[in-house]
Image 1 (cartoon, rainbow, N blue to C red):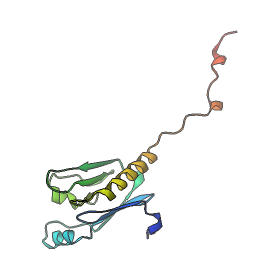
Image 2 (image 1 turned 180 degrees about the horizontal axis):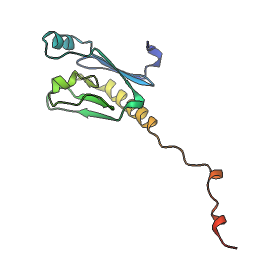
Image 3 (image 1 turned 90 degrees about the vertical axis):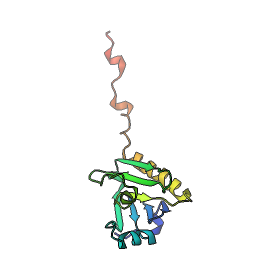
Image 4 (image 1 turned 90 degrees about the horizontal axis):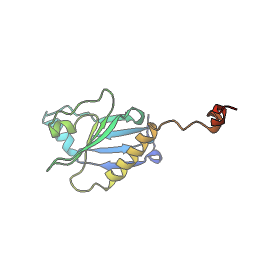
Length: 141
């Protein structure tokens, strides 16, 4: 399915690629020179593009190490688990490595992603008054 630029909600360019948020899904693309070099050296089999449905998202984490760029980890049933090796974890299909310096695009993307995920998990609305029991019904005459 081809995404339209008009449907895009937010986007962030990171060290290893780009993450783009759409109303129904999240696309993580690893298209930077760093990800190509990482694959060329044979350190990891890089997954070029990942598409994650918003309805499947179970959690969102940001891992912030001392020196390396932060990682956005999107958790869903069946996703890859983190190994503890920051560079290998950055290549997983559910992980996006942020840039070293500018995180403004990520801040917007993270807020919108949280809003979409919480909207999917919203509790059903309370019953209307017509559907509730009138307390006067319980009083004895």
